[in-house]
Each structure stands twice: as C-alpha cells, then as structure tokens.
Amino acid sequence: MAGRLIVCPTPIGNMEDVTLRTLTTLREADVIACEDTRRTGKLLERFGVSGKLVSYNEQNERHRSGELVKRMDAGEVVALVSDAGMPLVSDPGYWLVQACIAAGLPIEVLPGPSAVLAALVAAGLPSDHWRFSGFIPRKASEIDDLFANLAETLVAFESPKRLGTTLERLAAIDAQRPVAVCRELTKLHEEVARGTAEELAEHFGGGDVKGEIVLVVGAASEASLEHRRLADGRAAVAQLAESGARAREAAKVVARLTGLRVNDLYQP
Image 1 (tube, rainbow, N blue to C red):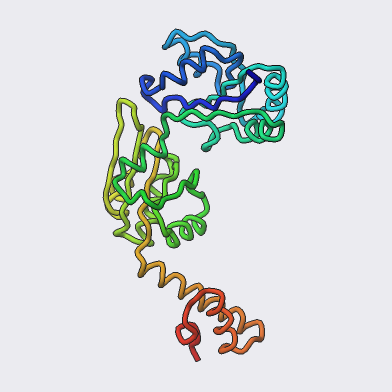
Image 2 (image 1 turned 90 degrees about the vertical axis):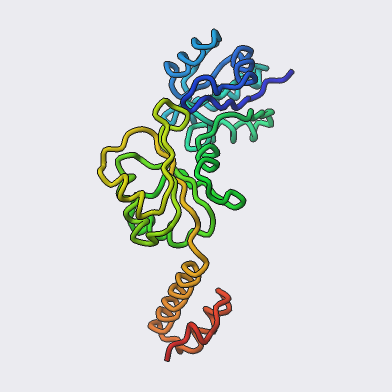
C-alpha cells in the first residue's frame, strides 16, 4: 500500500480513553509525528507500544511537513498525534494535512477523544447548532462582540487565569445566559459547573482556578439578537448620514442590506 497519513486522536486526560484502532496504528506506523516526544513516549510505554518518534510542533511544522511528505512518497505510513485530543483542533497538523492534499497522498482520520465534544455534551445546552471558536479572544471588545451576537451554542477553550474575567464580561452582557465551565475533563478532578453567567462569574471570580478549561456558552435570546441588530443598523444609518447621505435614504439602504424595517431604522 502507498504511503499515507493517519491522524490519531489521543486521550485528553484518562489514558484508558485511547482506542484500540489508535494503538494498532501507532504500533504499525513507520514513524509517529508528535508535539512532545516525551509525552507521547509515556502513552506508548503505558500500552507497550514501540515506535519511531519525531517532533512535530508549532515551531517546526512547516519544515517537518516537507520531510514527512517525502517519507510518505517513499511508501511509509506516518501517524500524527498531538499531546491530547485531535490534531489540528487548536493543535499542530494543518500544514501536514495541506501538504498531503497537495501531494495527492491518502489521509485517514481516526475518531476518538475530544475535549470539544465531551464538553458540548456535558454542558447540557442545545447541540443541534453549535460552533467551536478555539480560544476566547483576549480583547474586551472582541469578547463583547462574540457573546452579544451568539446565535448558537459556543464551545471554546479558556485559560484558567482569564476565566473569571471572561465570565464577568459575559455576565455584564447577559447575566442570565446559560453557561457551563468544564474543567479537567476525564481527569481525577473533573468538574462541570453549570449555571447562569452571573452565578458562574461569582463562583469562579476568586481567581484560584487550575487545570484545562472548556467553556460552553448558550446562544443569546432572539430578543437580545434583534436588539443588537437594530442598534447596529441605526449606527450604520448614522454613519452614512454623517458622510452626507440623507437619513431616510440611508435607512432604505441599510434596510435592504439587513432586512430590518426602514421605519425602525429612520429616526427623524
């Protein structure tokens, strides 16, 4: 069989969450590309797997991708793992996958542990429409915009040092917004705290939070989203008027672009 890439998820905490298929792949691969050879080495040792490890991380992934593609071109099987969870999901791997696609090399993706999906299910919030946004933005204005315009359930990573501040900003936007803080998933001190933004801001406001955090935030209410759309639409009308447009005509333009009513946008 021709060389190929196999993307392998690894446990996010509990070692026993590794799949049999992942272990088989790691045993049979010609080389295992991993973020931290020491951390992956512990996983292999735990299950009696021997394999050739090469580092593949944010610092070397572009250069190393070319090397790995050459090995696959020569017929080797490369297994890609990150320190925890699925590679590419806020972890290295994008450049290698892109390089394989460009070279016409086969790519297999194995299912397995995922902090994102575990948190989404544990939160108990609607999961028919949701999105993952990586890490919560650091700028206050970007955080405000993200939460105020949220039309579906949001799953995101957050630093324990910034969790309290983020929850406080969310509570200021919508104190009753449903939220879940998932901490140390699958590990010994796993915690899933559910409540309103106001309740969790108070609970985690002390600043002494440790571990890996996944934040799950419910969508804004339809009334809140409509209020925000109207406010943004009126601001756009005001900007056009300041640029010299007649207010009524500016309202008509914004109404066509947004679907809002002209009479709601035009305030003589």
